[in-house]
Length: 419
Length: 134
Image 1 (cartoon, each protein chain N blue to C red):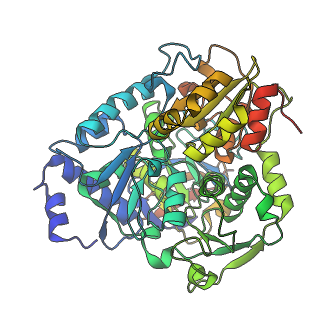
Image 2 (cartoon, rainbow over the protein chains, first blue to last red):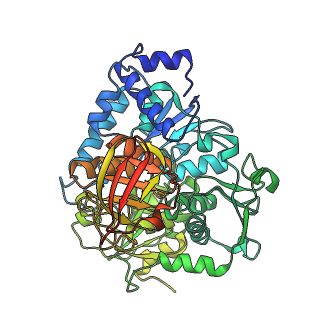
Image 3 (cartoon, one colour):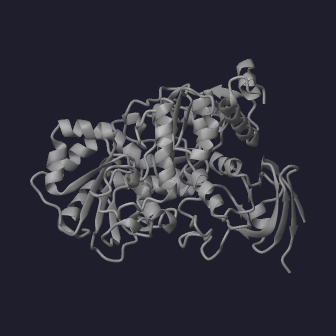
């Protein structure tokens, strides 16, 4: 790999032991993909590293070089353990490590967004920016909606970028690697009538079909709301490993299909209603219509979603047998409070979660036994029906119901999943 | 049989092969405490601890390398991995948690290698020796 003079100084240890270790890691990472050089990074978003790694990487580092925010995590690192009905003190070792690391990141200047949607809190990607982010939903949204450039990172690579301001120039940071290899044509679908869960099921199908290829959708209504795009894109790297979805006329670098495919000879596929129905079926595993938990906000709810939920719940009460959890971040929460939404939602019996990843929720640590969870997120349903990472981190296999936020909220009120 | 490929993460390993033909993630497709495959994945009923996992490519959440850190603490990591093509999440898991990975092999590893074959892999040279199960 060809390094600049500054990068050579980092690698040689002249900027301290932490910077050196971070650059060594990035060089090894780049060599795995035959990267020829490093590229400057504009934004980093981090799932906190294990304390042992973070201590070594930040040795001699005063401040992160670039915009750096932190990802959402366990409810055990929030003040909501009691509100959620979780057993006290059952977070476990990995969660303790995460809590210590969050404080260490704050010391180095990372913003404690604690959200999978840091774009709602000021970590905003401009067209052409390079980012290294945790959270495969934010990654595909940055690439496809904001026109940023970034790969599916994992582990300590994002901290290494925050320390050095660099990432290897490879895969989705390069023009020629971003072009679509499969083009999906949705013209057979009634796109204007589709709710966010239909879009999520479509994304789940696209991810499973495209696997690790770049895709294009040609095209969607230009007026489509950001929220629908969020639910469409976020399952693609879950059922598959898709991180780049050109939506012609919407994705900044793909104003038409020619720009989306470049020199590629893509495969062309039609999207059909049966594809959406099949995905919904995969995401629905509950063996009765009895709902225990309704969970919205994977990825974190926007202010407009909170407003819509408020309208559905104003003057109503949810069933005594149901927990209704609305998951967002602190910034959206403060705004929703100012708008009066939080009072209405809490009066109806909802709990507003912040700083939490609900897809990895420790259901095995709830005081009440719960079985069936309803959600409008394909991403969330995928992980819930598999029991996430397993019992070690308090997770367990849940039965799922999958449908729009309206259908989910109606189920919270009646206690039953409607047909 | 000798298969040659591209080094993703250096190192050497040997062990029994576990071969799957569907994409795989350390999160959702694996119980990180035991190394058992998830019941909804092709890996159901199999365990990857100490094995050579052969699979087409990664998928899923970017928290996989962090999950790998805890899998390592619990002693349930695979000894090595062989993929058709590696994505950054798989590569970073290997670099962070230190197990060898080879990809872009001269024959398709998912069809050439069978579960139960004994594998000796030297990622430094990109060489895989396959001793078929008898």
